[in-house]
Image 1 (spheres, helix red, strand yellow):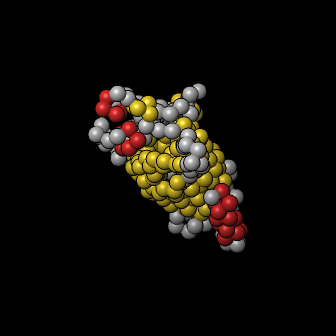
Image 2 (cartoon, rainbow, N blue to C red):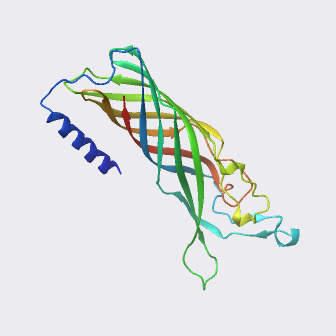
Image 3 (tube, one colour):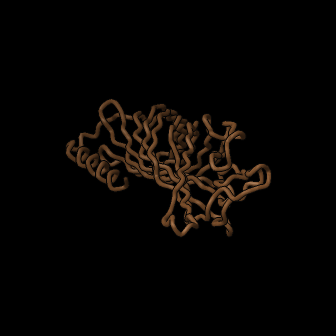
Length: 253
């Protein structure tokens, strides 16, 4: 993913350097307020902090006719894999200084996250590891706000750094699904409906005759635990769950 983004940036810089420094206008850097839109591609995964006894089998007191029973084997690993998503949104910019903007980029993103639970079967005649995968689907309304620290313009390009925070509201959360009738091993993993993240990134404004195009790479990391803690085989072993994302965006103004 990072390699592909680096290649894309290299292509952009080669294209701009071949424009013979025409110093096009484009964009609206001199306006106090400006608007635009953007598209986003992202990959998301969890950072998992486990409890001390996370390997213990799960005991379900309601199983086996209310006598209780162990419904899972001993855990060997819990991990997450990066999953791709996409988003679209707008951009509202306030010019604070020639080299500083305050930027608000509300957007709607669609993504899926995955958690894997590897179990070690205790039977001698059943060696190896069995895996259960839990999907967490999300449609997020996100409201990032950030300071854009820009260099001086060099012909038709202007690099910048970005730092800020983001409020995320899950409008299609599995938390809303009623899984009370599910067996213990069928229970869902649920995330909180909303959370805050911090963000940092970099990009480059590329000026054309009538508009400005901006490719950007950004990292996002949730401030706090986003797991909804319930008494299930999948939530119990986890102490805290954080969401981290790598985002590539393309802005047009």
